[in-house]
Amino acid sequence: MARIIVISDPHLSPTHGFFWDNWRRACETVNRLSPDAVIVSGDLCINGPDSDAEVAFAGQALRRERSAAARRGSGATGRSGCRDRAGSAG
Image 1 (tube, helix red, strand yellow):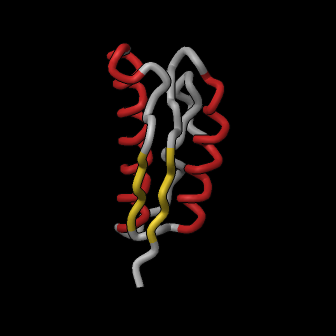
Image 2 (cartoon, one colour; image 1 turned 180 degrees about the vertical axis):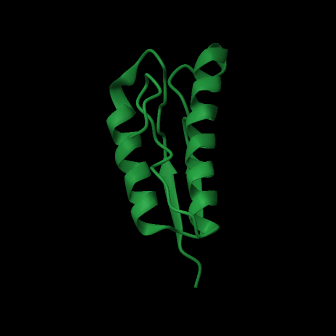
């Protein structure tokens, strides 16, 4: 049976870090459970289509997590794909 995690409304933003701790906890859970797939739905960032910078930031956060998942899937180990807003590995 496939194991799937759904994360909804992460509201990622480089300038409004209200939900960043939630994102880090979600990433830690994903890393710990190592699911077959992760679905991110809802509001990806706070200002959405009004802020290209927020959309780009959210996309980077998702790519980092996807890269960590790909490394886990290949048998390699590594740090979480989550980083703090300054870019330091978490």
